[in-house]
Image (cartoon, rainbow over all chains, first blue to last red; front, side):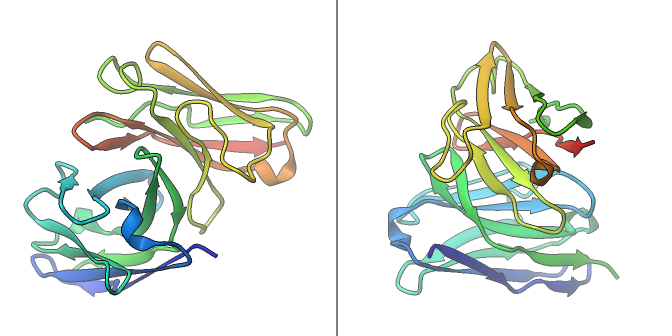
Length: 118
Length: 110
């Protein structure tokens, strides 16, 4: 079955970096665009970034532009999110999700928690 | 890009219908037929319920339906069941390959 499994979350100090991974299985990974979406504790969902199926195009929310980089390794069926210059407001559960129909997300991984705190 | 506006909560008795609104602007909801809806149970990942305003993915009960009028999209749950109690989020494409979510609505089954 289609499955997405995130990893790499943890506690990090403000200003530091962290890289998240999302391992995909059960579908042809290089046929689909992929997204990162985050959810601060007790808050709503926030779209973060998209990468095209072949990695040729990437787009970001204004809140992370210039600090976060989305990438993928289609040979390893893995999606990444490199997060630099982290801030307290980046504290959230980060979900990866497969893009379908170009404009919706299905399925989602179980999420990985990133806590930015000194 | 500001979050789309949803009511904080809606409620209904089993068997009743509830409708959740999702209000945006002419630059997002009003400009594209690319509104999707997600159900999220506590401490679980979101699940796609509706895409492209009114299309239902395989496996989603036909009690769930979506529509749009102008800058407002809506999700209706007919024949409310206990397992429908969850948070629901709308999402709209806003151009330039970017997206915005709604503020979220808690659905309670009385």
